[in-house]
Amino acid sequence: MMKKLQLLVVAMLLLFSVDMRADDVIVNSDLNLFNPDVRKCLLEASIKEGWELKSVYMNTKDQLVMVFDKDNSTKVYKTK
Image (cartoon, rainbow, N blue to C red; front, side):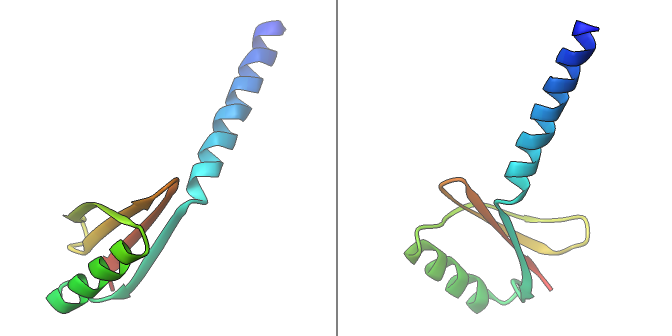
C-alpha cells in the first residue's frame, strides 16, 4: 500500500512540473518567416527586448521555426 501511495505522489509531482513548463511557451504563427526582412526585424526586436535566439529549423510541415528564450520563458515563431 505504501509503494502505491509513493508512486501516486511521484506521478502527481511529475504532472505538475510538466504543466508548469507548458505555460511558459508562447507560439506565434502570424508571420511570414520566409521573408528575410521579417526575420531580420523579428531578430532585432527580440534582441532589444532581451530574448536570445536558441534555434532556427524547418519542421515536418515545411514551416520555418525560430525559438527564442528569456529567463524561464520560450517564444516560438513559425510561418503561417
